Image 1 (cartoon, helix red, strand yellow):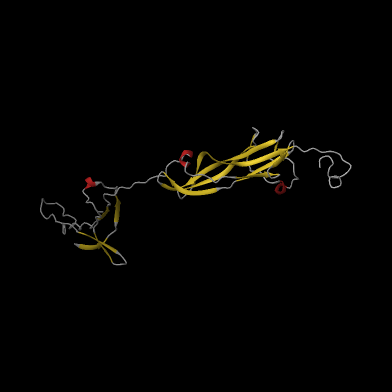
Image 2 (cartoon, helix red, strand yellow; image 1 turned 90 degrees about the vertical axis):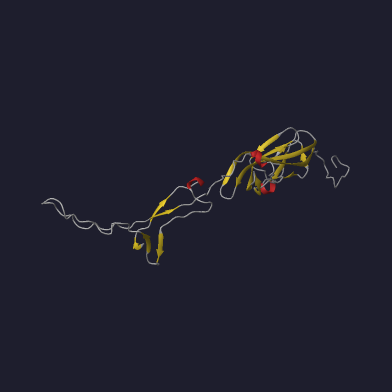
Length: 252
């Protein structure tokens, strides 16, 4: 065996199966390699043919050969082979809105003004509050985070009237409006009575398995109720004295 400087040639091979003759462990085959830190020496035999032959006989006028044949350049091909490795890549599952049944967004907050009261023929302001939420959990055995964002507020005013709004509304003071003026979520009752008001928030959903967010078609809802509005009539009368001055006067 003669050590010579040679170019290391790597040949990539496809993954081999058990039928390729590899054992159960990773098999790496290579020529003898010596690394001095400044160069890599690859060992290979020079083979036969250390010297060529010269044609000295034959007919007159025959020519001699050019001389001894030069030894073949030592060559070594390095083969790198990994055996018996089965690579499997699993993609996260497609998520439907039904898969989010165990993930529930928080119930919205519901209120109104005047607090618990209304006046026939005048706007009663109703509003709700909901926010985006991120909930961790598992879907089909995968760790996941589900994000809910409020998209639509559906108000039910208790008299058969409903309104869909992209926002939950706000108090009059936050809107800079005086009392009993219309808002995007206010309602005018035409008769006296106690009306159960409720709101349903429709949330859009998205999921992430640790990298990017993926939208889930459909909506998830959360509802709040238990807010009763006592609607009353207000009558006015012209009097010559205030109730302080005449407690027994009309309307006092």
